[in-house]
Image (cartoon, rainbow, N blue to C red; front, side):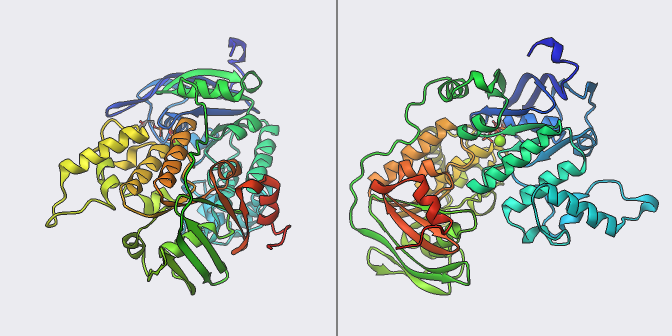
Length: 501
Ligand SMILES: Nc1ncnc2c1ncn2[C@@H]1O[C@H](COP(=O)(O)OP(=O)(O)OP(=O)(O)O)[C@@H](O)[C@H]1O
Ligand SMILES: [Mg+2]
């Protein structure tokens, strides 16, 4: 940017750095954010994107350098202070209070009314006005915990409106959304920018970077590589800036021989969430699950895996009927599930990378875990998956989002599972790692394992799968073979516009 924009910038970062033990997460970053622009920050996992946003939103204190908001130097006093300056953050993992109501969450941390009383009626009216602006028709007295992930995200954006934010930071906001919800989010973003607000947007999805951004800043190893207007970029150039090399094939699907049926699922039902769901997966096959968020894809995987109770239905592995009451039964039988929720069931955040990787697989002899073996295994997977951490003993909690995801994958690769259910495995991982991840999934299929791949991103399914099962409102709406894949067909089935055969 030329210097004449100085005065207009809403945010100016001047040589900002952040050091954690063993890592310089953000390294002397200069960055200007202009009012009314959508500014994407892109880069590989661990490049420092989230940390940079945490410095701006005062979740983390810079080690050196300065930040200006609206032309004023900002003092570090914590997230409340950043909010009062007009910096709002929509978190990668949401920071809402689940047991409080929508209205309470919206106005949390704000000054109460005169005489210290909160005017409940005014609060309710304000809340409902904000909710309408983000296209949400929910009652403001509802508890956050009763809302879907997409709805919770809207609440976070409404919170930004509530403080009349000048800059709204969104860290991978579409990671948990389906296509239709992404469209709606983009509509909200356009509304924000047309009112002169800046949106700082972190994303790994190239398609949406090109659709939504005005400018893109690429980070690598904590540094800004370049900031460019979007029209001066194309996919190849962007990828090259991010990874520092060419990535040839995003979806490497090796030729795998498709063998006998491994997994048979018959008539699974669970309340109204799952109705009479049946499918098969063969050895060497990758079966995709497509559908809108809430269609029941994760619920179906969880029911098969024993993470949720099922009212009816059977699961067979290699012709043998299984009694799965809890996840451990499924694991023992040879079924693995890579959850979409890495903060929850996927990882023991307080334990090291090495322990997490071997958690599900390493046999303890006489109750002792072989530490040397654990490290050797973890080290090998770290190299294979390019897990970025200064040490394999580091707590998983401090790894970047994408690197946490790789640890989950490494953990399941260590097991002898015959069937692996991958729930949004590429969510939050960078382009280079995505290609590696899909290559790996392809290899697992080639080894003769059966794979279920749940994804909301159709190009992933279309490129990687042998067949795609489409769900709609808890039912299997149809199964499409590789020769007949098309986005239109999948969307028609997913939205109920085309009836199941
Ligand atoms: N609290 C912390 N303590 C120690 N190291 C940290 C902490 N937070 C982040 N890091 C390290 O800082 C680096 C940058 O992490 P950051 O989360 O900013 O990456 P990112 O670009 O957002 O990656 P991703 O795309 O995977 O979300 C990583 O090496 C990470 O492990
Ligand atoms: Mg991040």
